[in-house]
Image (tube, rainbow, N blue to C red; front, side, top):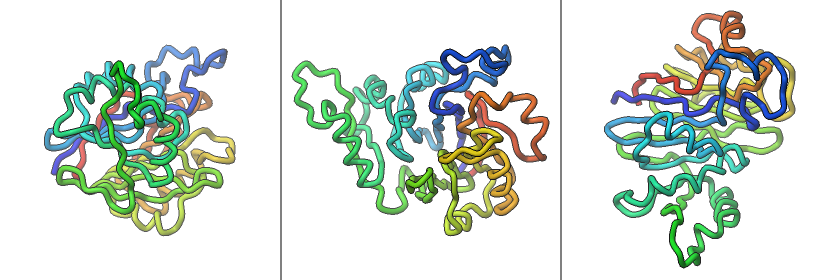
Length: 257
């Protein structure tokens, strides 16, 4: 079926502009160089599924006029991917049926339950809590007629998740993509890859490393995300090969899910 992917955020963990930075990208007047923390939303058949809830979720939701969510999938539990959980509140109060489902690995479910104990223990007597419930990811997640397949990538020394959904896939925060995951990235229309900067980083992919993944799996369209202030949008795009470009906040893509 037809689906739309919206890039809610395309930036690194500190966002762009970065606090206290005087570099050219942080002072750029190009709106594409303003990058909130990394997240995407997939819309299809009247449903909306989000991957990660960043500290910038409130700003992203207002910008995109998000009025409902049907599920949230989590790649991992670093701050830039989870700290928007509390801002899910207004979208959960009228969610039907039941609470808004959040999906994460069993280990990450336990982390979220401990970190946000005030939500999941529900002992706060004055209300005002996000109405959410955790569901462990132990294989493909079927959501409203679409299949979200978890894909293992390596973030420094830690295995985390990316997801494939129909002809699209979203991988963020990876320094290595295992061969078994590369095999599951073939035949894609759209592929999102981490490409933090040009110079090496211990837990993230570089532009060069991600271009090698593109050469290996040959998607029709590739978008680099989790981009830091080292990469100016226009200049970087001009240097990339055909079919590859930087993602930007607010980008919308049509594909088959």
